[in-house]
Length: 226
Image (cartoon, rainbow, N blue to C red):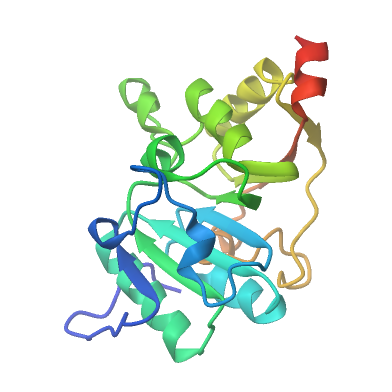
């Protein structure tokens, strides 16, 4: 499976894809992303780095009683994924063309996300680029902020250095999150961790995968653990 997209193909994102500048605002600059859906009272899950949208399309079809928002920085991948959701008529899936880390830090309302997915995000392997990784000390705090009580962050990567980075940040933030083993989503195929395009490509290359789940601690637990 190629990660490139067909040149010259037109993608229709209407009704399923949103540009960052088109977002509505509440309370100044804070957005409740659940309001982007026709049924905002449903459980809400957020994926940062959606790529071609494979996870969203597969999981959105399996869990039609849950709303999914995927954030993708690459315009071409964003358009492809939004068109894919449209072609599959997944009314519970939306794509946003935006910087996922900035969305967490500056735009997303508190206590609205049930599950946060980070699957095979850019490892930014050069040391001088580590500051561009999604997981940082500051974003760990914002992940805790946007999650509902009992919410969870799922992290999956094939990159050894990024996995060590995840482990280090998880250990430094045990006052915010409880580290537990990862369980594959219902849409994953036999033997798959998640079932994204990246995973399937890397599996053919013989790469190993690393995964964890971080469950949000309550404020009271955080205070007691600090």
